[in-house]
Length: 268
Length: 219
Image (cartoon, rainbow over all chains, first blue to last red; front, side):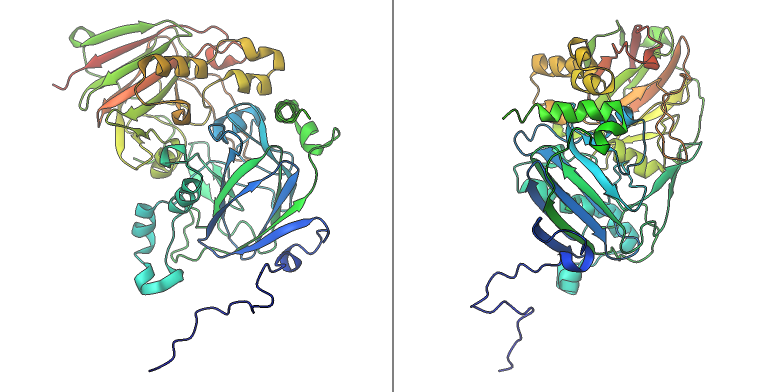
């Protein structure tokens, strides 16, 4: 009988933890003694982490036009979650870049954008669901494509928040990092194709203990006819929490108060 | 329907034939059952009042109005005549069938004690706000809807333009006394309302005022 090869090489028994230092490829400027872990995420992938206050997530686009949809919840009290309208109106913004803060519905900074080489990340929360994905790209399931199957952003996020006891009613509007959607005078959306080039990166510093879930499925307005979401590199490193003279605190008075409100959760 | 600037359309429905006529003072919550096929009119009685509204499927409280589904499907951010309000599951919940105001906000959200501390001052936390209204209406009604379901709402009669440079602005209202918006229910609904009590910004022209709700059965 023909021998069926294993789909992947597994690590040798005497070196069984294949925690690869991917970050050395896409974030080599990080200090080796600060990096906690890193991850190479294929397009369409999804995962979730509980990231403590004082850690920073570096996200790096590894292909032109990558997108990563991110939702955040307080890890301590998951009823507290990222709130798009509260964050946008407090900062009078419809895009995110360095200095902006992702705020919860409880008036606290969940995370701050402490570094950004891209300049515009889409906060309008649009998300690819299975129906739109089918209409746009057709069907490509596991039976025919194995792990090259199409995955939607909504289902990816639903799987991740489901691991933490949350259901579809808890799915908040995500931030689409690396994507740009502008709005014209009539209110219409304009998607900027391949806005972020490979190598573009952005950092999120956690101001609270955060449950963060993401999907690297395509932005729903991406007009590319083929389903071809880009890869994203992730690295989490120990940055410490926001100092008194922090750039994000001083970016806007609203941000200073939101980070102050988060500080009050960590009194000792 | 695609996004567009402003589509004005007047209604032919007569108030004397309405099955419900309710005036809601400013700063009050309101929870109303609406049945598929009924038409709801919300009237900005004195002009430039923000009426903060979320809709839920009455038979499945996990299905709520979704700003992002609605915006994605219409390709833009403002609501006006012919806009369809979609649920998180992609089902049509209501259709705007008449609108004499012409533009309604989908991004500004509802004010909260906590967000007031961020936006204005820590000492604002004891002022009345929309999210307290939502919560007290839901606590008393006990219908299986709670804080987790307080998703981004519609602000009827409020004007929150986004600029091409990516700024969110709070512009003078396009509403005026007796402007109204009318919606046909496409499913059985709960309508959760806070008639906004915000005094810290011009969303209510610093003077919150009553709103009127009329409901008609299908002809």
